[in-house]
Length: 516
Image (tube, rainbow, N blue to C red; front, side, top):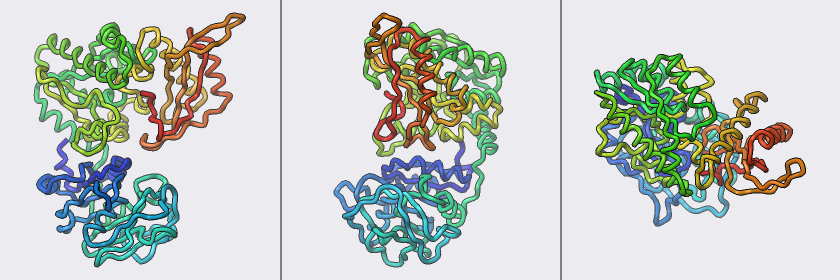
């Protein structure tokens, strides 16, 4: 996407906060284009990006420690408005001559603060405000020219500002839903202080993406890896609208898909939408490559490698194909540390990192700058069915990372049927759209059970269901015991080789949503 078409842009500089990505999403929700970049972005790239405003994220380090991440001085020399959040506020204070110190009483979680004075940042905001805190240090003395805008019982400087230079700092996190009126505070900064104009809408995004795709591709042929997931489905609809018959979708049935998913994908895209789709039955290829492999990261890499290999084989059969389209989205790029930030890689994404040098296809990633919620909105605007757009997330490696340890065809069949029963019952009970993500996990351990008068020693299935706003934190779904009992009975009665069903009650953090 030509981001320069959006004159009003906000830059988020990442100091390592778990909420950095969420800040960028919140800005975009307010209609202004935003990007997340590492805290040490060069001055040349900063000038090229030309933001209307800058937000400095929080971070795990201490401003007073040896590992403190420095604030680039050029950021504070111009007239561009700046908002520092948590570590970002402390970095501003320390850089400009204020004082930051460790606190004896740390603040983590919901807190009450009191606003004081007047500032456009807090216009129309309640004077007594519930916010979300997460800090070990605090500003104890503001820099010269700054005023205190808010305080709490334990923190004398919860917010500060230099109105003349349009530099602001808040100790709390306005980007999280736990902060009351946090979105309104960001709205004041983006629109009132920075003067941003909301042009970031689904309609504008689609028009720009189509223009970019047509300009880049020209009359070339494009291959798309269609998985049936939200990202690749939206991309298929977008490319079909952009270049029509120049698009050929390759649907790789890895043997790790959900029950009947292969048939559903072909019916939706080939039969109903008229998109050219070639189905490749590669189950045996993937299962052989994964034989004996137990490490989760190794499994992900193998699945990604085999996926690209299948494409190479298909590409040789397609005359004139010059582009391989992938449904990479912005969170994939960020989480894989693909944009150069300092974040640790939690797990790799099989659709990030480009193509092998020997592959004679150029990479096309139109959704690379979009978050998942933005992709969903695009899908609805492009006419895709809500049932498809709002399906629960499904990992790129499929059931391969919901089978703990080694993958065997027997395990896949067991899990596929158990998962189908769980999802079917969630829909029937009206729970599917109330929870954020639900699925079954296969545990390669055996548990004793009794069927009739016979003792059996079979596998365990774990059910997982969570509720979350942003997938960065999540809590378990409070599913009724009667419902869980009904699902359990169906699985035990209908799925062979399962003797026990358990329910995962772990939140995120410390657990991740997926088991691998």
